Length: 412
Ligand SMILES: *Cc1c(COP(=O)(O)O)cnc(C)c1O
Ligand SMILES: [Zn+2]
Image (cartoon, rainbow, N blue to C red; front, side, top):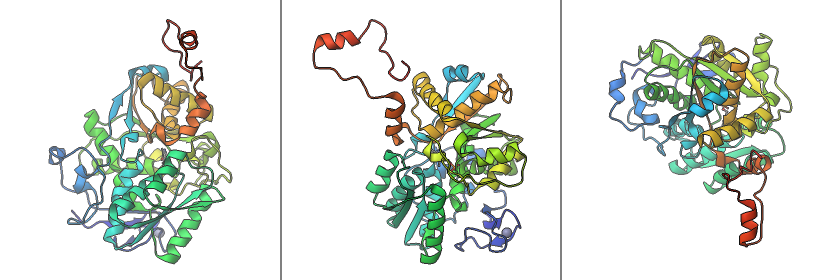
């Protein structure tokens, strides 16, 4: 493996990969990890377990480093014919990231991020989070035996995610403010107290998340035409695009997909910027959406996401909470796949784009479904309602059970 470098995406200034630095010291730009294209081919990976570390040569962690892992990645790619018909495309696949150890794609990033933290000698890690980052970091910090601090926007974190952070032993602090304020706080506190920061501004996390692209190519046997990704802090779409670019650079694929970035209508600064063809985002002060994982008004990684969309000849759009919930239900009842609201945005976006003639009905698309249904049980009760309650007698049950299949409470 060639020596990896940390490079500013704006001014190209380079930093030692062993230095703890999150933004360019000259211009404030985002950093990314770069290395020369490694000399590998697909057969090198063939006999290894399916997951993030299958692609060891493409992950810029020094050989011999002890890896912190819970067997992340290697998630299923489901072909969804009924959902494809529902969305109006010929072929639709779901890359189901809910099958990761803590139930979201964040684990792909944390295995690399926490491995890096430990190799740098950090004794404590921290993040601000809309939920899944904290759940994942708490688990990986526990696995590594290091202390974890988590700063959450109060009252806005789904119960399943909070439960995970608490049970894995993170020190959880709730801030009366939104995610963007929590992130600013954790960045300041990390700098002043020497705690290693593992929000997605941390470029090492994206090195783990990019493996989703590698898995997709192996699972499909070819490069998909279009990959739809929900955008919150915009790390994931950037990471997946980086993965495809690196495969291309290493001569392992001959074409790249178009990237589709989907935001929630109440938290869509990147989509707004692209619609108006501006050069920077206008942060949204009070982002609102039922999809709490993407309830972010000032996404840190927006420049990388914009590059992913523009650089891939991709598309972008926002979807309303109604569309998100309707789609979440459709994924669940048409295909048996349970996803949290933010994940449904990727599929909702596809249906919208087909109707707007931005995706051809003959297309083959992959939707990244980022997190598990059980993350947010309260949202489910809100949108599906509670089950009917009856006394324990046969008559009461029979009255409710018709010869027809059971009515689906979600759909009336
Ligand atoms: C974190 C998260 C997102 C958003 O990903 P970004 O990298 O912040 O754009 C979407 N869905 C789920 C379930 C998440 O946990
Ligand atoms: Zn710079």
